[in-house]
Amino acid sequence: MTVLIAGAGIAGLTLGLTLHQIGVSFRIFERVRQMQPLGVGINLQPTAVRELTALGLAPMLDEIGVATQTYGFYTRTGIEVWSEPRGLAAGYNWPQYSVHRGHLQMRLFDELISRAGPESVLLDYPAGAYKNTRSGVTLHFENGQDPVHGTALIGADGVHSAIRHQMYPTEGPPKWSGAILWRGTSLAKPFLTDASMILAGNDTIRIVAYPISKPDPITGLATINWLAEKTVDPATQRAKNDWNRQVATSMFAHHFADWTFDWLDVPALIRAADAVYEYPMIDRDPVDSWTDGAVTLIGDAAHATYPVGSSGASQAILDARVLGAKLLDSGVTPDALESYDAQIRPIANAVTLANRGNGPDAIMQLAEDRCNGDFSKLDAALPMPERAQHAAHYKSIAGLAPDQINQAAPILPPSFL
View 1 (tube, rainbow, N blue to C red):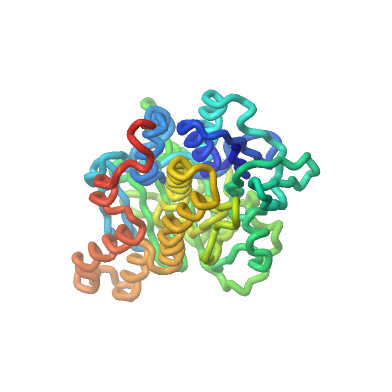
View 2: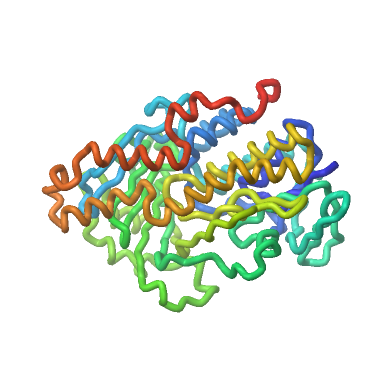
C-alpha cells in the first residue's frame, strides 16, 4: 500500500511529511535532477503555520521567515487605504510568516529526507501518463524510466501538471490575465513596522513588498521581496519562451519612477535588485473534480490562482494535511480521495474566482474609482466601515477569520501532533 506523489514542491513535500507522520507508505517522484532553492517570497497564513507546527516545524519557520505584523493596501501615491494586524497581533493562535519559497522548499525536503530516508524522494522522474488499475494506479514517466505501481497517485506537479492534463486534455495552457509581473529581491531597510507586507496601486499597476529576512544587526538592511505588476492588452502576443526570464529593470522601472512615498522608495528598491525575473499573471479555471479513480490533485495542480491574498502556498499545505487525514480515516482508497476533493475543492475554487476580481486587493481599485485621482477625498468617498467589511468578506470566503481558525478542530487527531 504505497501512495505515489508526483512533484516535490511545497504541496508534495508537506504531503510526504504528513504521510510519514501517520505511518502511510509513500514515494515522491520529482522531475528535476537536483533540488535547488528556486522562487521568490511567499506568505504562509496562520492556517498553514498551524499545520507546519503540527509537523514539528515551528522552529524552522521562525529561523527562515519573518513573522508578518501588518498587511496593508495603499494608493499609488502611498496613502493608506486599509491596514490590519496579522498573525499573533491579529488574534490568531499562530503567526503569519513571510519566507523565501525556495528556502522553505529546501528545508521541507531536507526534513523529509532526515525523517523518511533518501529513498523517499526520487529525482529525475518527470511524471507522465497514469492508468487506473484494479489494485490502484500505474504511473509512467516522460523520460522512459520504468513505470511504478501504487495504491493511489497524488498529482502535486504544479500549474503545468501532467496529471491534470490527462484528466482535462482539452483544457489548454494556464490563462493569462494580461498582467506582467516583475519579481526581485533587494537589500533595503524594512518599512513601517519592519515586518509589514504592503500592496500599493490599483488593478492595472501596483507594487507588492515585504521583508523575507530579519534586519542585519549592523547594517539594518533586510532582504525585501518585491513584485511590480503592469497590465497590458491581453491580446498581446508573447512567445512562450519569453516568460520566466531574467530581464533588465529598464523594461519596467519607468512605470514606477515617481512612486516615492514617505515610508518607501520604490524606484530605489527596484534599482537595488541583483536580478529581476518576468512572469505572467496566470491561473486556471476551476473544475468540477480533481479526482479520477485512484488519482487526485493537490496544490497548484488542483487550483492555480493569482498571487493575491497569500493563499497559494497556504492552501497547498492545507490540501496535504486534509488529504492525509482522509487517508487515515478511510485508508488509501478512492473514497478517501473523493472525500478530500469534496471538502477542499469548493473552498479553493471560490478563492480562485475571488482572486480574479474581488480579492482583498480590490479595495485599491475601489479607492481609485471613488477618488478619481484626488485621494484627499478618500475618507468621504470610501468610509472606513466599508473598507472593514470588504476585508472581512474575503476572510470569510477563504476561511481566514481568526475565530474560524482558532476554534477549528485539529485536522489530524491529537495523537499524531
